[in-house]
Length: 66
Image (cartoon, rainbow, N blue to C red; front, side, top):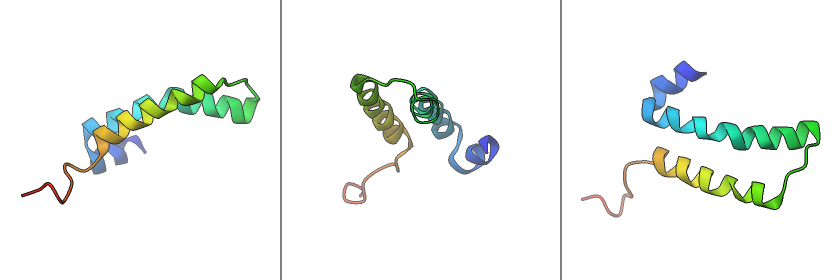
């Protein structure tokens, strides 16, 4: 899967997905192992997801392109 992601999206976008590992580990631990998750832990996923979106989004908005 890693090499397919590298081929389709490039190294910059693919490396951004490494930042999903801690939130996914926390969610899988909560869901599968019954670990306790605080609301502040869940709120920490938002900036991570926003950062990944900003790195991997298309280059510009169609309205702003000239």
